Image (cartoon, rainbow, N blue to C red; front, side, top):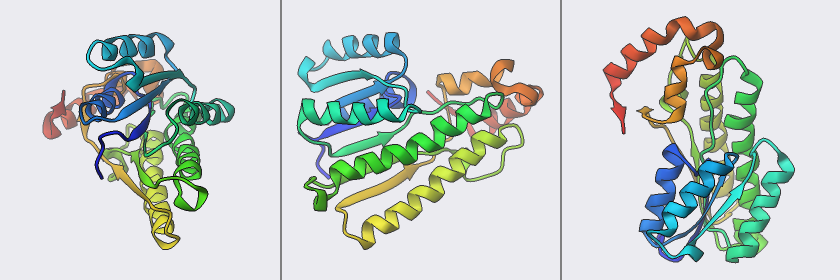
Amino acid sequence: MHVNGKVALVTGGAQGIGRAFVQALLDKGAKVALLDRNSEAGQKSKAALDEQFEAQRTLFIQCDVTDQEQLKGAFKKVIEHFGRLDILVNNAGVNNEKDWESTIHINLTSVIRGTYLGLEYMRKENGGHGGVIINMSSLAGLMPAAFQPVYCATKHGVIGFTRSIALAANMDNYGVRVNTICPGFVNTPILQSIDKEENMGQYYSYKDEIKNMMQFYGVME
């Protein structure tokens, strides 16, 4: 798929892996809408990107992906602003074993909802142009993790959902390819959260074990 001139939407796009996605897509000539619930981080990212690229190629939308109406509204704004949607990156995620219900809503429910919204606009039978959806999973989606049971469950869920919806997209000729990515340890705010008891809860005592795994697998910057 040629990226130049395409329109992309990236959730959790103000920092971390999402911000790297935004940068890479812009480097390849795409127009990008970055969604993030952190307004300050989003505005700073937009300002920094405007120094590198034409301002009209980026759009920041403050959005809590767990809020169904906000997410639907954000997709609508992207279509109204850019006229189409070709690439969707469902990247927003958190690591919080203490507030585990929120982790499920952000890491899994929003990915499912985002995928369905993306298909609504991108499916050729609906008048879309086809395209690509990328759902962010993790190394934690490929193995058990005693210190992150809920995070691990959400990432396993992303893989299962993505594989299944990809089959449906192929069988019904949506014109949309759906993939998942499973990165290992990346130096982002999520990784840094393992040192915080308010995130890890009862699994905070496992932090040294996590750090040993980080040394074994390595950490991407």
